Length: 474
Ligand code: BG6
Image 1 (cartoon, rainbow, N blue to C red):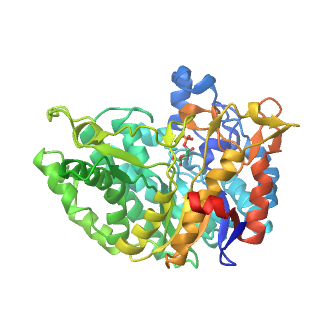
Image 2: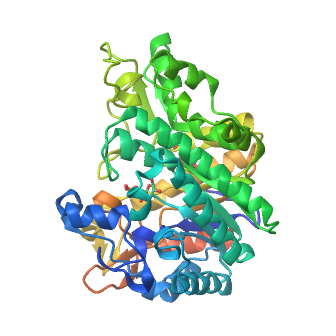
């Protein structure tokens, strides 16, 4: 028997993408006056770090009309893109008119197709002019970011339905300073803390600029929520989980929604002389207290299973939270996406939404990314169409838990999936594909997968249809 879960009429269905992952067709594609980003730079220096030595080749720069129509054909009513800082202000000082015209066209096309325009200002893509100053460890980069943000707000203002400063700055910090995944992959714990503080300040400087313009539109922030699940209820494991949540979630959500960096984390860092006190200005603390967001985007893919450390860490050489405060715990027989190496744990999306309700004043929120990247999808082709039932099942189960949260009065307004057309996944390049639409890299053709038809139906009817057997299993 079928069960129907009906969503509010104005619920947002959509997808997220980012400039660096879709706009270009090679690492040397600087059409339209874009300047070099850390990704161009890193790729051109060290291609072997990238799967199959491939750079982004979605070519949204010339195919945006076609791709926006595809988003509409899925019955989406919203779409998230990002503005490339290196395209809008290539030298950090002067606005590039070609960049302005490109994004104006993109936003206009989205509106013509009745897609609400969601725009992020920074999605992992730091221009090289900012990196050459030292990147986020240099405070002036926060000012440069606020300058870029103010220009973008002034130029595009109310053409955008919802603005967002950053996408997943926690991943930028861990990837750049702790885990060797984002250029210049420094392995320097303390620099990571300084950069984290500067990104929080950059966010608030941008919000302050936004508020001076009195726009009719909203502004928010998008975070990767990686909730900790402790190995056991032993005090040491619970403490490990607490530390993971402090680093991954509260370090950003507390200052950004509640106006203050968590004192508990400061105390922990001070014990080891790792809190960059000398870098923190009184005026920055005030700025963080004074400027708030209107809504929060929550990216969720996988939880973080943790356990207490099984060794004494060397505090003279702190590396990362997961080497010095907790360790990853490998639960046997967990449900996995083996291609990405991520655990699949849909109920956490409900827990996250409840956390927003209970700890963050039920601020307006939406799921801004969630999806399943699978390698070698061509093997699932029947009559030319990828039969991605695993993707449909993945989304159905997450949507079920979102509906449950909605019923418990969480202020959740939408679900944007990663992502509508296969795109470039950073170091994994085109290995794992997330799309409802296949991108054929040889021809550039966009070919709907089975999930595209399912998506069309879901968004058109605002109704999730599952069987009672599925409901019982969830
Ligand atoms: C999110 C990012 O962390 O996860 C996206 O915002 C990214 O940019 C997505 O593509 C999926 O991760 P990956 O590494 O598989 O592409």
